[in-house]
Image 1: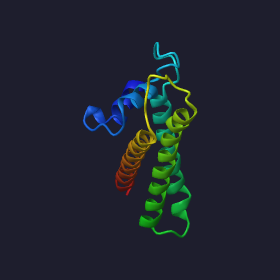
Image 2: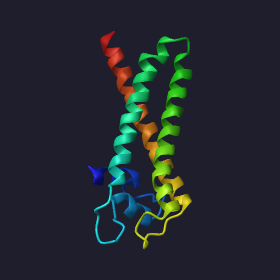
Image 3: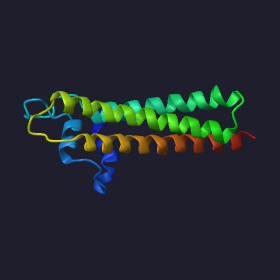
Image 4: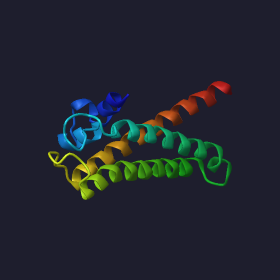
Length: 144
């Protein structure tokens, strides 16, 4: 599963948004640089992205849409919330490791790499949120 998320966040190798060193850290390269024994951050970040996006989506359609917001406004608000939350999580995880030095000393990644990973996670959260919205819309039309 970690390899699946690695492929997604690395955009299938087509558009590298962040460095290979950050990618190695996210795969779980340990502090001694001997193997992938540390936490597989790709998996945890991907799992959190899916979970939080589903939670925000469910809140948007079950609670927020029942209140007085117009459909486009609350969809945009919920999508923006999913994007911001997922960016913050994906940026924070490697940034804290980079600032504290708790990673393999051979890996050199910068704050800009952390921003790239955060953007990648935010874009995938938006894509997933849009897919959920499309599926919900299709199910709603079938029921009518």
